Length: 381
Image (cartoon, rainbow, N blue to C red):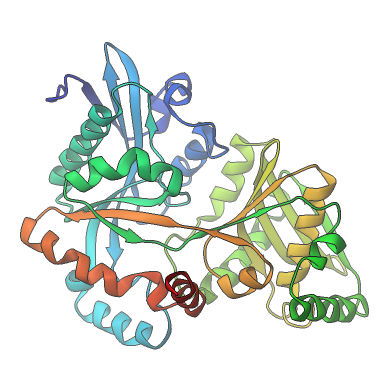
């Protein structure tokens, strides 16, 4: 398909139809690479349909945008007192609070696109045109760019704003520089109250039956146990976007055998916690956690898992730790840094798009998360 920018556009439904060398030529150097998306593509996420927009110039790929189509509940980011009544309203009137949306990004990742260095504005406009074409065919009400990190705002923001997209806040990601030589040295930099609380927790855990840690690349033999813990934790989350299918954990190990890391904690040989992470040369991305809540409180499993992961990072010369969104209160106490993410969204109906900003200003995360709300007040003071 030719477009007004002089570029050509192709739409693919499977990432396997795109040569990996084309993907690598335009995508940034990130651990969530072609093989990561291939694992997602083969895992058949329920409620998602995948598309891949590839822009060519003279037969060479200059832009790639992974996208997915879903029915998006507008109350996804709502927590607290408003959650239940709005959920009941959505159940009674699903077409009011749930819209079909085409989203650039991945159900399990930040929203990144691959753009070659030259003629970036033209390539981004071609990607937008490709999304609008899919949205028309699928009768999607909205199109969006999911969880755009700060380093992409400069690349995408101006063009998206000119095309009628609204920029709104998303839940921030979490990061930490590991510039200490031990967990004990790390704790010395925490507040007195946090340091005292952690020492009390760890002392209590040390008096209980021992927790054993195993780090491995593959969990095929205990996949059911791991997925059971994942579901326990997912079901307790106030904000639920994507629910990983069980096969994802097997596929990610198959496609990313060197980068996939499973941290497994056992008590008397019983699996009580896991963290799934992605590891590169100097970065660990802590992606998903699962806890057995019959042990979680007495063993302070959240803090034990964090301690053990940071210790592993130090031992393996990992310099950067990254974690997903949510559970901000303990992460703030643990001295993590919050990195802003943004959503760019527009309604395909111009009149509806005009009023969309008001709706999303109500739905922005700081209205429902007290930690984000207090940080916002601090930033403004």
